[in-house]
Image (cartoon, rainbow, N blue to C red; front, side, top):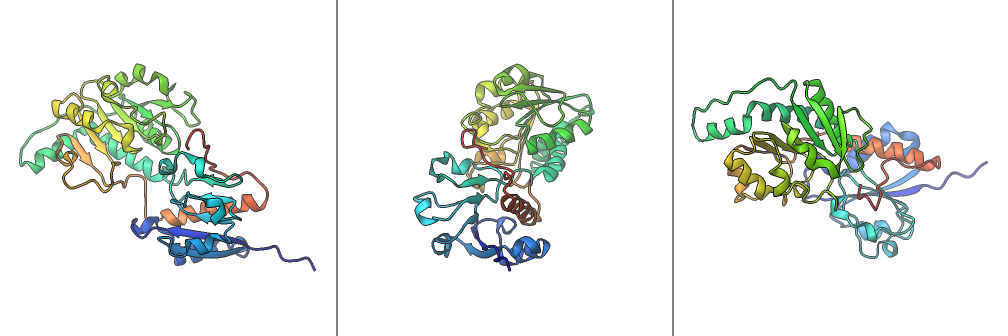
Amino acid sequence: MPAKPQRLHVHFESNRGKPRIFQVHPEDVKAACRRHPELARRLRITVGFDREILADALQTADLMVNSDPPREDLRAMAPRLRWIQTTGAGIDGLLPLDWLPEGVTLTNNSGAHAAKAQDSGAMGLLMLNAGVPRLAGAQREHRWQPVYSTPIAGKTAVVIGYGDVGAAVGRAARRLGVKVIAVTRSGDVRAPADEAVPVSRLSRVIGRADFVVVATPLTPLTRGLLDAAMLARMKPGAGLLNIGRAAVVDYDALRSRLASGAIGGAVLDVFTPEPLPADSPLWDTPGLTVLPHITCDDPRYIAHLLDFWFANLRRLLAGRRLANIVDPLRGY
């Protein structure tokens, strides 16, 4: 009789300080195991919070699901570790990846946000087109201030970052009749767009945009990309939607241009720090809508994550390349 294959030890680690929809609880893992029983039988599973059992678990862990893995002497802590899956898509908080031990693969949760991002992209574009950020400000001040707008069809959106999230916004825009100019690292795109340019040519196209959408991860290339000079190139009255990372945009310069009316409105979903402090001037900036980092997430987030992880586990057991491997040089 052939010997049973050795079970792999996977440790799921979460932070109680994060919203529940981003925490992996034992009941979440059990439900996923019921959906993938043949793979679950190959596993020994531990679940922890706030690093309470992490040191002990890592002594025998082959696999780990954790968006904040320890980076100091990780190989010594986890001699058998071969794969880390982050619970999030963005990994800017883990860069640079010089702490990642040789022989350990890092994958992210890219792709989990696309469906919600498409809805939120349509919402954000329509809000900006209708002047909702300024209308909401007038409401708070008890002022009757009509804002008249033309239909959105036929306008242009420059979408910075055209991965899963950016392409989802692009689909929403094109369904609204909006022309999409995709801006990517290389100028190449996998999803449909009306035009695509490399990020080095952003300054040449940003002035054509009625809407500028930030959907890029934060990397050394994108940090501060929309600085004061780049924002000054935007078309007068254009709108800005940021569902990527806050540090891509100079928010102080954005506030100034919103206050002057040079930029017509902004919808921001990402900030540094988060939660946005109560005394931040962004709360009261005219023409600005603050969203509490919700545009790309839904309550089924962890179920999607675990189904993706089990699909990747099947690839691992079959000796195939994992999906969503992070490139240490690109940072995503």
